[in-house]
Picture 1 (cartoon, helix red, strand yellow):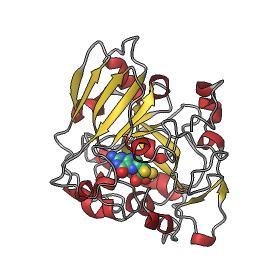
Picture 2 (cartoon, rainbow, N blue to C red; picture 1 turned 180 degrees about the vertical axis):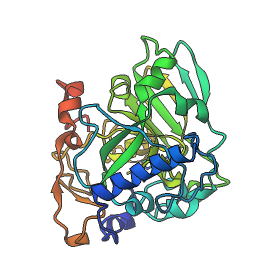
Picture 3 (spheres, helix red, strand yellow; picture 1 turned 90 degrees about the horizontal axis):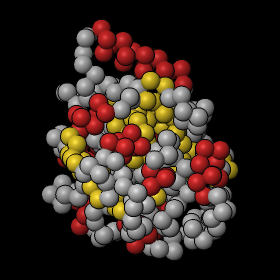
Length: 329
Ligand code: MTE
């Protein structure tokens, strides 16, 4: 996001067209039927390919459609090819196509998530346990990148709150810090010095406990492709995409506001809160409108107005009551 050449990258037209909802729903139904007919366990990873460059290659991970208010954006889905081929995962490179090219090197099993800090029961969770811990839901969220593009993605996962309750946050815990995998042997981007690694993000505890905050394990009815942050990532739909940390290895509950990678790298550009706000421009990109990836017309497609809190104001605006959101950007 700091890199100039990215400006033009993120404005380049996308080849594919929108996946019609009917096609996607039919495909999801087929996945479910195939899993049932084969008596296949829905346990992810068994035999999963790591490429994820087209639907149907990874292990099925269906979820029940969410009943949470705001969790199902009624807009055309962004094509799978764009969701999995146009990524920000700087550990694998800064070009949008780098993550899809390099992330297959990341081994996502076994995987351990450590939860510690100001909690009554600090402990580590293996990925299999995490997959069974909450009821998997499908949530269709808008993801709005600070670079000015957005996607509509059918994620699969459950609320982060369910996991945090397992470790019993203490009264002194005010913030949650997320640290993601940093492995120079497989991540060429770590040599580039774009950020101080590992990638660290943070939320206020009440934001982390908000039901819309998703711990995602899949998308489009399958386990997450590596480039999208396998085996588990955050999705915080009312914030700019960089708050949604990928491939998380540690969660720490703390008293002080965590020092996050992007706000350390460019504090004037990336605040801690980073709520989507059309009225607070980024120094290099207006935030008043956005281009939906995958829509026909490419550069000439009509830009959509960006909505306060990315369209989730009814659900989350009260978290910021009385705060000056120009100052706390
Ligand atoms: N997480 C890690 N570990 N590394 C990253 O570079 N990029 C962020 C976020 N999470 C990033 C990350 C940014 S800038 C965005 S916009 C989203 O991931 C992109 O998610 P997507 O590639 O699945 O669309």
